[in-house]
Image (cartoon, rainbow, N blue to C red; front, side, top):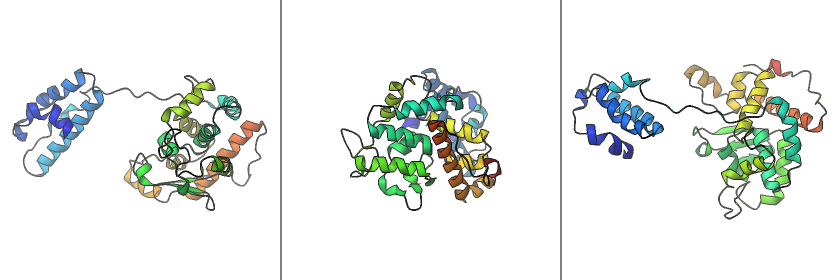
Length: 285
């Protein structure tokens, strides 16, 4: 309502909804666009479109002018965050192992790479969310970007990181409490600063580790559905989304252990001898 009251209602709020035309609506939204507020302009178009759809459904209008604005409003270009390539991983892992900063920060980066959850989901991790007996991390819906609970299978190497971290922060609710206020997560810049100290000023971000994992797993033959489910991406196709409720948990367990073993092999320089009965190319749904 605040955005509508500030940007739309002064010009159009007193007009009968059935009389408003596409050019009039576009000019109102372009005011936000011209001042560089492209995200605001896009949201205004969506909200006005919803209002007109409701007007049509309730017999107040027969035309949705917002529908004719598609492509007329500028949108902000998507910029992909820097991500490490497969060939860069061994050097990255060596630098991470040699990192001389805070151990908690190093553990955070290791968990980011092993679990490839989103940065905020990692920073806000709670100890009670981890079931080490079941080797599962249960992230509640309220902490997920898409507001849907997420299960993260925990590999053996991930459990080892938790054990290293346990004596350092187990007395807190959070795995990664802030230094000034332990009731709040560590700063979002803490891990990014660690990457800078490791020499990755522009070549990598914490979020980019998700892209690194996704690329390598896709190249290694894992089913895209399993990878997407592990990344907690929302499936927009309703039929496929119904299958996602099954979680693919067994397949994801194998994939996450394969990924952890792959990283271990890169760290030691000794390729892991994977179970020949479970090659990644057989993982399908």
